[in-house]
Length: 280
Image (tube, rainbow, N blue to C red):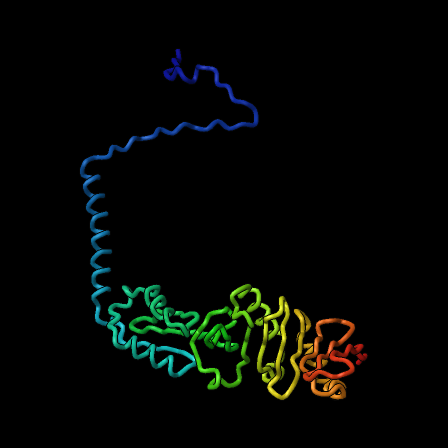
């Protein structure tokens, strides 16, 4: 008589149709022994020690000592001054060089608008200087060179400054300085280089109004607050037309449909002429 020695085979086995039953795997638990912990600690300590020793080597390596400084600037005098100041200081290791501190020191010079410092391995530093560019001389009691940002660069003798217009205000800019100067910058930026070269004085005494005096003998041109270049060209084209009214003190061109002419000397018949604009 045959005997079934495997009782499992005699048990009924059920399987859902179309589905596979996953076999269970026996997971072995790995015990973390003290020697494993000690080994991991030693490996980690060795790794950080390697990093420390590498860092100490690099910051004391002679080949990383800064030995070349190159300063670039469009102003030779300013470039030489910065180059001389940088060469006097020992900058040390390139890795330890504080770029922000160098930029802050250089930017403290009033003529410098911005500066870019770059490390060049293994031992060089490049310094690119961006200078302030004066656009005019402004009279605020004294005369100062001024850039488009409104920064007073340097006090000057106005008689020694050539090629830059003079910006004035009868109240010496005690009120509305920012708005007035912004209008002056807007005026200058609207002109061509040829037009700018003809400007002698920009007066901002009138509220929200630019008045201009040219370098040659000319009346004051009252231009208002917009369309400066077009009005400038309009005056240049009609100089012969304005000449028939004699010597003029000013021409108000701030209106769209007329010019208002003010004679330099009083006339017995009429002191001010109103003239309709001619179509060009």
